[in-house]
Image (cartoon, rainbow, N blue to C red; front, side, top):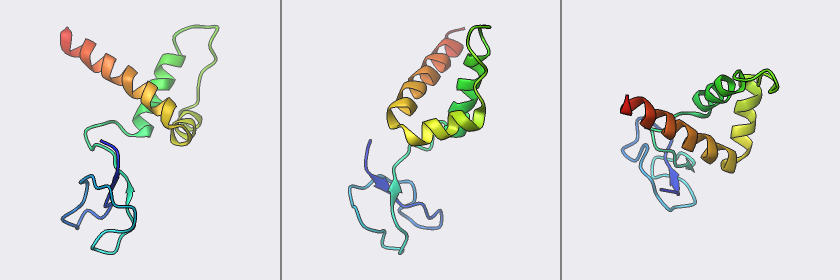
Length: 94
């Protein structure tokens, strides 16, 4: 689900998606909604790093650089999130 959410853990609206553009009733500015069960960009960056180690032709990707790239590109994050889901499904199938 797209939208925004309240980042304040003490708020009753924390982590709930909303289509509001302003702020929450608690006074916090809303942030982009992210499903709490999805991995963070830091976790996805580690997946990028693990995949980059696979062949000698591909240079090792730094986790910090991968995280910056994921932070900057929603399309890249979506692609690596799909890789994560594939890995989870494969792991569950074994």
